[in-house]
Image 1: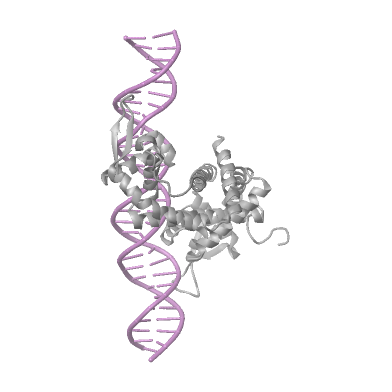
Image 2 (image 1 turned 45 degrees about the horizontal axis):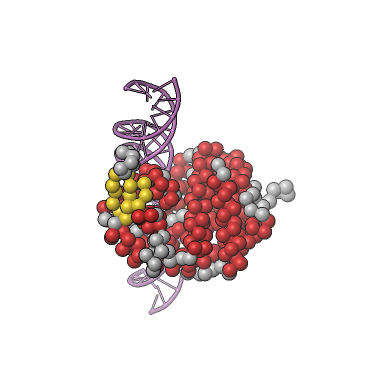
Length: 157
Length: 157
DNA sequence: ACCTGTTGGTTCGAACCTGAACAACCTGTG
DNA sequence: CACAGGTTGTTCAGGTTCGAACCAACAGGT
């Protein structure tokens, strides 16, 4: 009984484990809430919203599929699926690329711009409510720094 | 042209948007890497590992399904699925609960303990590498604080 | 022009997750 | 005891995700 604590395997110390588990919990619930809000208010999944948002941030509201996949954080096949969904509902259109026969360019339709204009405020409000408003100014910058640090580390591979 | 910037809809300011998108990116890639490492090294999905870990942290290495679902951050039906998978591979066993006829208790088998002992160090090393080692001590505590703040906010509903 | 290696996007299969519907069971109130 | 209302866990259908395999098209060297 003396040599091993009864708490089971713990290869991270107390603090580290708590931080990691806290992060996992936050990440899970944040995703759930965002997903739910978008679905209810705009009929979009989070990935779909992300696609619209990334397109809207690109010049001309259009991007090649691969670039879009990178920006919207999904796999190539995942993006094919999502764009197909968005095309069904008329929010995105696909056209072929002139300079590269293989290329496909996804671009926002007028309805896509419209949908985004409608749904972005609600989405932003939720992000603000759940994520930003809970933090003091100091906490926010510290958090942003930490995220940036982890991001660089992840990128370096 | 003058009144609206060409950057598309942006209902969060520069800083806030960058933090949110940074978080999304980090969260996505962190999940991917963890998932991949566990799959490669232990043949487990992250949810499955989570189940084993939570069970191992519980007294006797066993928990009722509902408690386990709460701890492992999945829905009830998701847990049923995962436990079924883990049962197939012999890492978890189910037994019925004496005090409550409806209840099912999931408990780690010896193979389950063994698998966890084998895989935890690799998992911990990755978490350390991607998540913890990228942060200075200050950044770490600031991050942990921020996560805790968000967590409380999410819980308050 | 012709290989060779690389890239762009889609398709396919399998795994996964979720919410809703369900049956079995508990609980407490009359 | 009976019965209404809540809980427990599973099942089911539907949508979603990923990676591997694939074909078409580019690019560079010979």
